[in-house]
Image (cartoon, rainbow, N blue to C red):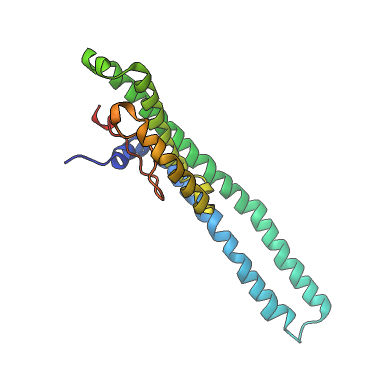
Amino acid sequence: EKQSNFIRFLGYVRPYWKYVLLGAIGGVIKFTIPLLIPQATRNLLDHVYLNPALTQQEQLEQLLLIIGGLMLLFVIVWAPGTFARSYYAAKAGQKAVFDLRTDLYYRILRMSASFFERNKSGSIVSRNWADCVCASGSTLLASTDGAYQDPIHSNSSVAAVKPVAHRSGPRGADSGTQSSGSSACTCSWASRI
């Protein structure tokens, strides 16, 4: 039973699981702390502004305390958590892709002469680069918010490029392209090496 390309690629990410874990912790911080803003707003409205027992001075003190606390929380916890998420996830992705490129390069060097007769060197290099970029994109997609913040534009740009990329593959093979709405790459001949 043949493993999928994604499962095989996870083997390259496994040595860097600590970076992935730190990136995941940073992600939890990044996406959890902003949820405190609606809670703080509710508290300000329900227990401070609408509380007739508090004087205007006490309301102002509560406002400054809650807003100041949120600002400190964002500066001290949220910003480093966001940085950790991006940095460690990108570091794990770059190291895994480097290992993939190294293994792919050594596998290509061990191929028989008939392989190089069937495939032009330019298409081999192009395919090697495209597949590694595809793998890099799928790992770095997890560390950036670009495709998740604007899914309409990301999917439409992939849909516009996809028909051109399929025609330009080496000897009719599928190119390393992304399918619309996912980060799965079709790395057909590289998976047979």
